[in-house]
Image (cartoon, rainbow, N blue to C red; front, side):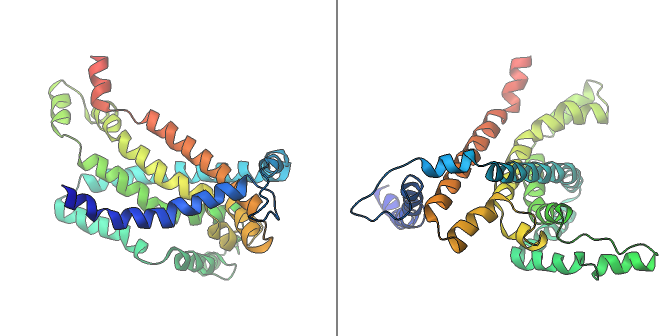
Length: 280
């Protein structure tokens, strides 16, 4: 057993160097004033006060949460039916469809986003196809529609795979029992399949909402810099303005919001079997 513990040491060192130390630095920068040196560190809440008192930053935060929620909802609406259909196909067919779902993720997300820039241009593929039908051109690039589309395209595979995993792990004997008790297909889905698949949906929500609320290059490329989200503000503070203290404060505030979201999803994600025992 001691040998196995020693095998974990490289991972612990890597985690400390790549995760713990950067988070401590962000924490230090967030609670200190700009221009402090090591010898005279002055702690302050001014960065947080600036962020939460500025209506511009609050509007950006609300927009980021709104876009993340819309993206998550769309991923659920489209991802659940796709995962349900795949989960009920034959084993060979499942592997083929899962391969198609995961195949785009083998390509770098930045490259895929650049591809959508070409597709959504006024002279892009979609507008050319609409031109043959006598429609358009329709302006799609650098709009909120393009930003949401880019996020849904990049994040929906995570939703599909999580729901698919939950559906395939479901005990089919529950459906047989529901059928024996006289439930039709719709009733079986609503009373058995849907409740048992909720953990997969919750996992999918976590994997979609968290990167969507903090994304910065998708709104930057598809929004053309005109549709600023909170990730773009953090990037600007670190790379352009050079105000690492304020950027760290925003990052820390977003980390708290994300952790709170994870706590809420964990509270919602209850054991369906336990719920069933309580109802009975």
